[in-house]
Image (cartoon, rainbow, N blue to C red; front, side):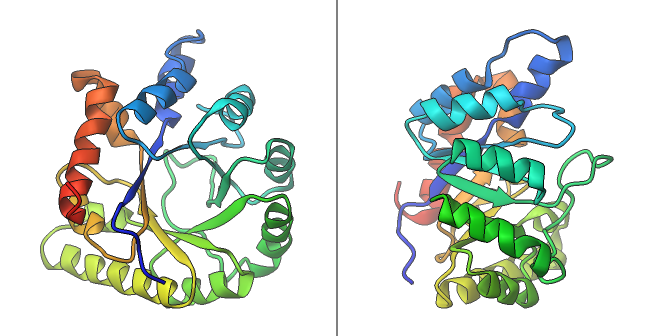
Length: 247
């Protein structure tokens, strides 16, 4: 599988909803944020409907699924409740992620190997509904093997540890992600990557030739406070295009 030169950028808008929900108002509107991100160069929009509805709500998912003109990637826990919601709205893509209510954010990849039997019917149902299914996993050969057994078309490699360390440890993490992206691609699985990426650390990940898409959210919403959302997304678009050699 040859990766396209253009690296897709998915913008996660969860934390626009976090700000909205802090006051219980209708603004800022995540859907408006999605439109601005699209104008600034985003190729897709991601949102995670958590079981406790701490940011994105069911109404947000309904609108994003039905009204966006660019692909919508619905992040969800592998539960029957979330499966029912996904099947109702049939978004372009569904990414299965681990979820613990006490965590502040997703703290690692889904153990697809250990949860195979729980995931299999969810993956099958989503695929039958026409959704592109992905697994948010660690860059580990055991998890790639599990993705192959589950017959998912996409994996998203967790970049959180890469973003948290530096020096030789970061070099080792980058090598691990690069190797697992190549392994996934060799086996017909489209590799994506995301979590914790910023202007300062995105270039080496964006330069991995097999990676097809990056999903970035919290940093971009944070930078939008100072720069504006359009400018925040446009700068990330510029940096990944430079890293990819398409600027």
